[in-house]
Length: 287
Image (tube, rainbow, N blue to C red; front, top):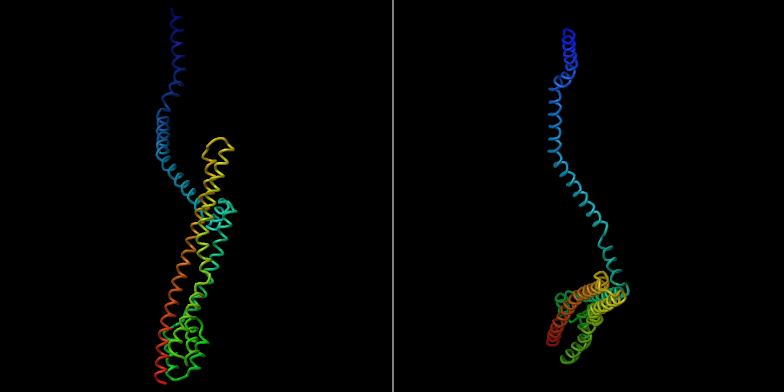
């Protein structure tokens, strides 16, 4: 019995001794483990709260980078390059014809604008000086002034002064006839401008029809109506039409400007002719 009791006590002591380290491992680090858990939780919470801000910052940076790339692409592709690419896409054959119509039409327009600009003078001052010479009886001086002055106004005045010794009806007839010739010279080349104004959209429409034919040929070859197949022919058709209309509009603007200058010079010629006849009449009466 004593041996059994001693063994029992010894086993209890051994169990207690073995339980102390385990209890020490489980109980003594309780406070640090809790602190570690709280610290880890705080770190996770802060990371969770900071993650949307970081994501939004990354999104803003991505958007800004995309915008910068788009702006760089837009800057790299200038208007000249865009026009060149559209010119090639619109079938270079027909686009070349439209461009040729633009170049030749602009050449006629520029020539007329230069000619009309050189034909314009200060008609009122010129006629006042001419009247002073006629009142002074200096016919040769008046003729010299007309010869040295450019433009149709001086030309018709010179034609009238050549017949200053004849009747006023002959002078008027000579001035009117030569004024008609000068008016025809002012309008020289305008018919070609109107031709290219009508030709440019016609070439564009011709390209439209041919583009439609190309689209139907591609559909027939493929045996299927696909948006990709139709779009290629339609794109050629629309681009040629757009460029043809733009060329016609540009030439029409120049043509209207030329007509306005022709009307201005013609009105100067008519006023100068009337002033010349009045001056010649006063000269004859004075003489």
